[in-house]
Image (cartoon, rainbow, N blue to C red):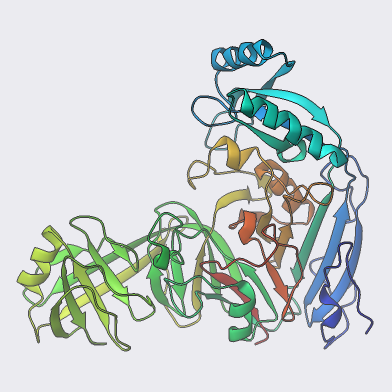
Length: 489
């Protein structure tokens, strides 16, 4: 097979080995759409398709043209690039006093299913073509030298009207003909971040995409920790944020739902208590469960009860040590440490019960070895209609809803076929990414009746046949918390 490269020199799936031909049109239950591209004004995208393996096709999709340029945005006293009308008007006066001609721009963040619209105002100076960024930077320097805080912005990132362009990769996995399975991976440990490429290679996956958001606000050595539910091989490795969207994988089936997790410690003396979290940093007075997959030492300043596979307390120790293979550790500090010392005596038993509940069905998931869960980012489509649950999922800011970013998206068709997509962004003139409403429209266009936004930005990555097929906005593939893997069997 000849090697094909995209503009900019990024090689994609030409190196894939074709194990089968695509299913005939009569056999396929998931097909690339023929309808008009949903974003911008171009009636149809350009696309090329590669058969990956039985039931899996990869599409390289491009649409739109570049007409956006650069501007200089004046920052508000809050440090944000938008503010209230009176605050923005005051900034307009400041800019005018410096001899420049500012523009006052009204910005409307659209309403979503669980949050009303928001109106704000921006102050901007100048507008330059794509190849005139240097002129924008010169104006920005002049304003900075005069005492204003400003930044240079690419207008295509705003989230307002644009002509694109868009560069997307789409994997369609046909429920009728796919014979593999789906899994989640946290890499070698919960605490460490790894690239999707590394996790896909280690897992023998034919396709891999980055998973949910991970905690960038914790200690540097713990930043692989998922923000939300994580189950790998039936083992709960991170607790849910109650009610937030997640992807439940079992065998070759996938489901989008909302989850709640509970973890309870029951001591031999009859005392029970809630466990506050799993495999994360501990706050004051919290009881945290650490599993052997954690990959870091327990926090200092508390007490650890080391449990064997049967729940027997094999050691009580001062916290701050690693979790040995074949053990779990109940770590407590403050009041929680008192509970551990009083009720988890050496050679006694502490039964730790974990439960994952599907909030749509109100039923607990069976934590079998073929069950995997990845915490999502934001619900986008439900029952075929746009339903963006940005507030419930913790992402209802102007930046997350309206602004365009690289996106990693997951959708399910009516018959359960899986659609995985990346839309690259933050590449002026090449691809603008998408905001939440655009991402939802894109997934509906692809045929998704249910869809979710996974982590995006610099984390967006798709690996097919061992090759990174998209262009990460950081310039290199970023280490992430977890990945969704498509396995050949």
